[in-house]
Length: 357
Image (cartoon, rainbow, N blue to C red; front, side, top):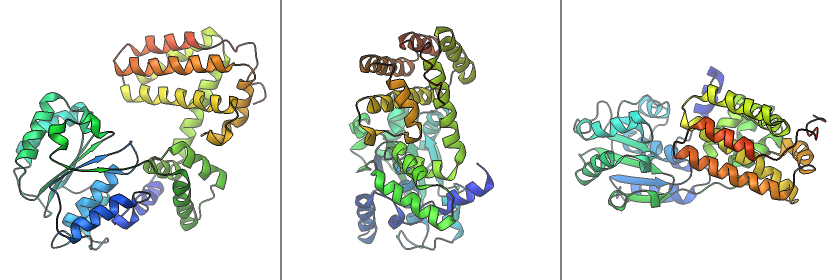
């Protein structure tokens, strides 16, 4: 991210609970907790990726450390708050539970939090993807929750509370964040556009809001960083060229993807999700549900493919992509997964599907 985009991203990062977008029920609950001085020592934030779980956790850290005592009233320009917003605070520790490093950090957590905060009043530990922890890491976390040190708060995040062991969730106050409506995201991006005099068109903002599917963090990032949408554009173009090509073209695609991505599970998952999204939009156009299409800028391309691919074949491909996603999660060889998917695509090579582009 360039320096200008970094500045914009920080500018539009929430600094108080009232700045949260589309999660009024969460903000009201937390504000009331601070006003009544009845604050839990551990929280579990549940909801899809990108709806604001980490933002909520950081706001909690600000309320704990921004004043002489825990309060929703603090100076947003203070050094303590700026450090938390910019991710520089020594006492706000963020751990990715899905990564190998994150698992190692969980194992060390019980020892580390015995020490008093270095600079702030509270040490705040934010653990993302807590449902991905190993059994050993879960046990270490459970011991910490059973015997929490003073001046320490544990903030857990998960996509679904059902994926978190009850022994963990029962020791936390659970707050469920919901996907944010498209019109709310569009209004929010419109405010950023007006404030910063951006040249993005209303159609572009509307498309980002649709693609976000309730993920406010992703929408903001895509709006502030053109490279995110440009990367999607290139990925969809490659998908369309692969679908329109012959079997050799499709195996070339599979080979290129496997060489470019190596063994990165996250990147393969992202690629599979793009395939799902493209074919899902194609089906929406096929059945005439244009209001449900996410990628409106590709409408003409979808219409071309709809002329040459039957709805039955589209549904078969969607099923094949879903199975491919399962295979990748199960750590099946990624190259074999994509090779198999290429064999499931209907023949379009003689159709000149992209001829008008």
